Amino acid sequence: MGQPIEITRTDRTAAELRAAATKIGDAVLVRRLLAIALLLEGHSRTAAASMNAMTRQTLRDWVHRYNDEGVAGLRSRTGPGRTPALTDAQMAELKEVVIKGPDPERHNVMRWRCFDLREEIAIRWSVTVCEQTIGRWLRQLRLTRLQPRPFHPQKDPEAEMTFKKTSPVC
Image (cartoon, rainbow, N blue to C red; front, side, top):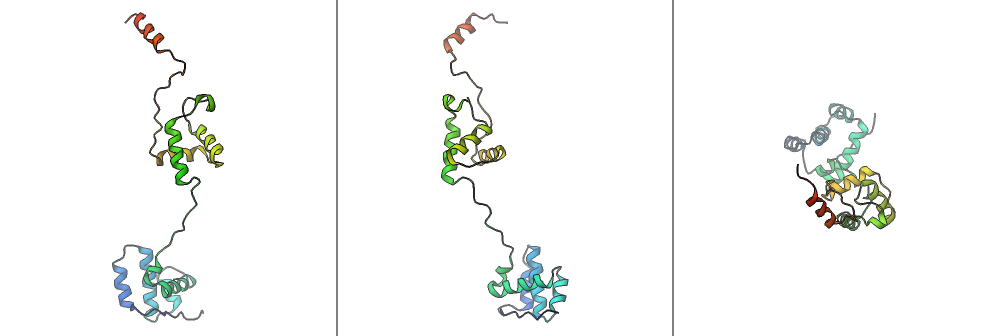
C-alpha cells in the first residue's frame, strides 16, 4: 500500500468541500472535491479513489494540485493548442487578396478557387495547407463561396447591345 497523502491546505474542511461540490456544475471537478473530502475525513487513499472512479495515483496527483493551488487547481486544463499557420496580419492580407480577386494574366484564372488560393498562399508565405483548410479560413474571414457570374475579359459591351437589339423577341 502507498504512503498516506498529507493535505497541507487547511483553509477548507471536508464539509466545506462537499458544500462547494453541490454548487459546481462540472461533474469531474465534483468527483475530485469529494475524493479530497473523503481523505480529509480519514478514509484511505484506495477507498477514496475507488469511491470516485479514479486510481490511487490519480488521486495523489489531484491532492498535490489541491495543496498547491486550492480548489482552482482541480479544474481540468487545456493546452494552448497548435499555433496558427498564418498570423493575424497574413490573414488580413489574405482577405484583401481574395476580395481584390486574381490577376488573370499572372494567375491564369478569372476567379479564386480554394486550389488557386492554396497555391498563392504557398508562394507568398511558404505555408502548405489543404483545400479544406482554405475553405475554413474563408468562412472565418466571413467570405462566402458565392461568386458573381463570370464574364470574359475581352467582352465587348457594344457588340452585346447590338446583338440584343437585332435578335427577334419570342
